Amino acid sequence: PALAIMYCTVCALSLASHAKTMFTDPGSIPQSAVPCHFHTHTNRTSTHTMCAHCQSYKPPDSHHCRICNRCISHMDHHCPWMNNCVGAGNLKHFILFLCYTWIGSAFALLIFSWNYFLCGTEDCMFSIVLVQLVRFMTMICIGALLFTSSMIMNVTYGILTGIGTIDRLKKKANDTVYLSDEEPMDLKDVFGVSGYWTWCLPIDPVFEDYDRVMGYSTPQRLLREHRSMADAAKQKNRNKMMMPMTGNGQKQQQQQQRRRNIDYDDDDDEEAASGTAQDPFRSKRSSPGRRGGYEQI
Image (cartoon, rainbow, N blue to C red; front, side, top):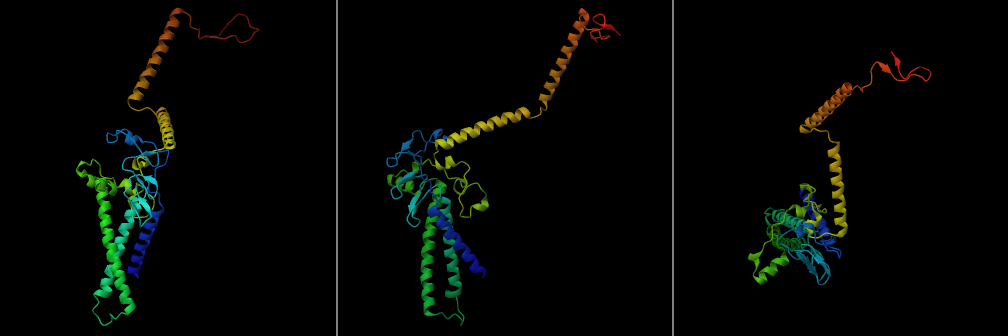
């Protein structure tokens, strides 16, 4: 039962990753895309390109897919098994599908080897249907294991070098692989920053900087970012004004208070010397019926 539960769990994760790769947006570039701040201030992209088919901004490492008829950010290739492109948006799901398929195929081969090929007891009597089914499943598992192994190496090479499958084929055709200046991809730009425990689950990744990962931004996102930065700056200034003063600030405040007290004392001395200070033993006019302006106490 434990082996069956483990195998069913791996198969369920593989199917879920396959579905997420199919139905997740691989990173299609909208018509309103504009260069983001990261690509504007880097030496790598001194000019910006436009897609001749989409008539929109084309970020670096993006390609136009003729099958999907759209530009894909960080496009690796168009997968016919997924009926979708593999790009920055669904690369995590594609990697999980390859890994879980590889694990499931290897696990199935181990089970077949232990219960069928290496069985030497008298109880190992199988029907003709079961024998043919095991042989057929063995061939499928070997083919899936070899295919996923090659694809895993391909994707791993792309992450380590920062060069996708399409770009690598173009560079090999032009013999310009040694001139590549791409940097390795950060794993957080593939699996997100939600936590390491989410890396092995077929859920959408949360990127630290979505515009930098996708390679483009939109006027709406830039406006929201500008407003949020302005609000954060106002809140920071407000907190500074409400924050109690410590250290040198307290010393300066005490010195200013002492200077005010000294100024008040000097003013009192000058009034006393000139005789303009009010007599403290006289009270103000008490009532309209009394004689004189002041009453002697």
